[in-house]
Image (cartoon, rainbow, N blue to C red; front, side, top):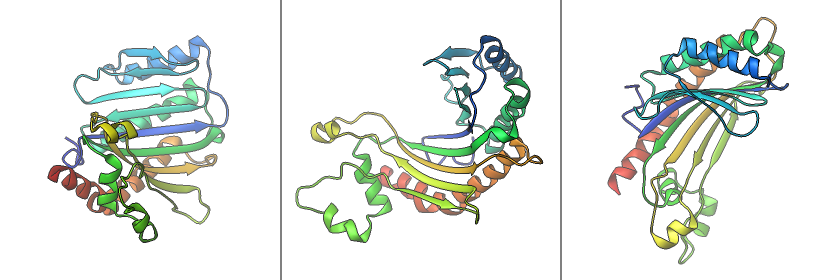
Length: 247
C-alpha cells in the first residue's frame, strides 16, 4: 500500500499534458500510440471511446487498483488509482510522456501546461459542505452569515492557488469537490459519492529546448509530494479523516 492509503479511502495520482496544437486523430496514429502503451503496461486491455476525439485505455477496475491513459483532442492524461507506491505511479506518467514525441509528434514547444495532481477521496454519507466547513473553518468575515438562523451550508468548496516562482510558471492549487446536493440535504438520503481533496502542481508555457517532459514531470511530482507531506496531511487530510470517523 502507498503511504497515503491509511489516511483516505481512495488515493490517485494523475498527469495531464495540455497541448497548444491538436493531437493526431487518424486511426493509425491513435491505435499505434495505445499499442505502445499496452506493450509497457500489458494489463491495460480495456480500450474505448467517449465523445469524438476522446480515447481511453485502462486496466480492470475490479481489483481497486488500476492504471489508465487517455488522449483527447488537445490533452493527454495518465492516472493510477490506489498505486502501490507514489514512485511507481510517477514512472508510469514518465513512460507515457517519453512516448509522445515519437508516437504523437508532440514537441517541447507544444506544451500549454503540464500538471500533476494528487487526489484523496473520502466516503461520507452526509452533508459534505458542512463537514468541510467544520474541518477547515469558515473565514471570520463570513461566520455570522454562515450561522444565520435556520440555515444549512449547501456549498463550500474553497480553492487556493499559489505561484511557486517569480515568473508564475510553476503554480500549485488546492481544491475540494463536495458531492452532496440540495435534494440530499432536504430528504436526508445521501449517496456514496466521495468528498475529494486535490493538490495540483502545474508548469505553464512551452518547455525549453534543453528540457524534457519526463524530467519536468519528476520535478513537479517532487514539489507536489512535498506540499502534501508538509502541509496537507496534518492540516487537512488527517483532520478530515478524524471528523468522518467521529460522525
